[in-house]
Image (cartoon, rainbow, N blue to C red; front, side, top):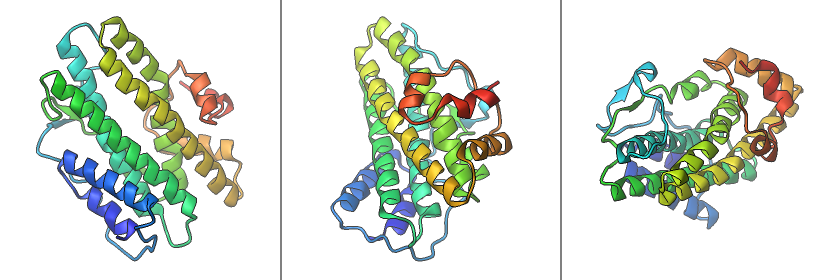
Length: 264
């Protein structure tokens, strides 16, 4: 097995269950030393393969996600989160295949293979929970703007790190605790436990993003905080939303002096 080719194979796999299985198998094989790091040239897809369902809609056409006491509202929330996690699987493997090279340190691949594995687990947990509620991933429309951050930053690893883990995943740290609290309040402890697992793992993902952002910025003789703010202004469509979960962000080594000066 070769890491880049296996990562591209996951990206071009449309079926979500098969994408999850391949992700977890590749991560296990990588940890066991059964995958070659060698990076021969390979064509990178512009966007990952997707199943026929769900229907993909413009971001502005999607309702706001919020937990409530009704099963339908909770299904809608879990479906939206499952779609985010499916995209997150591909973002991790795109990081490996697009930005990895023979010169990349082993630790870079260890980190992003771990992220791909954990995102696959998250999607599987959400998919199983949807099934237990009488639903399935694909039953509802989903947001088609989630890959835009990957397209916008496909040219530069530092930009990708700035936007995906340090803006998008960091935003998840801000909003997930409220979702967990709401689900518990409505008696859905099973869904709350899944979101807690996702939240705990995502702190680690943001920390990985921060660590590699700092390392690469410093290698380029850039001041990390200044470089991050400039890249966010240039490549992030929107503004950083308050309130911030400063405790979780601090744990993930994303301090307030990065995001507070440019927050909306």
